[in-house]
Image (cartoon, rainbow, N blue to C red; front, side):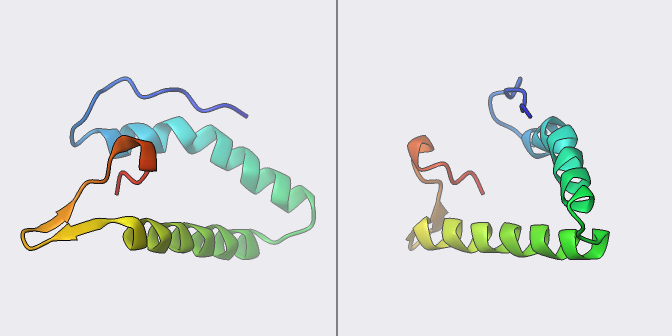
Length: 80
């Protein structure tokens, strides 16, 4: 399962580009979980919970100043 690298540097299209890049791997994950006996609803709920936990961790690491949030350095891997 591989995910292709981004083609654009920064901008409004990166989220959509990332969604397209991970789409096949995501479909493979869903299929694998269903093959293991999980329902599609259970898998969807698990993926959503994991995504929400990841967002919470990113927010906890975000640097905030008086003018609002500052994007952390790239090595911290929190782009949102």
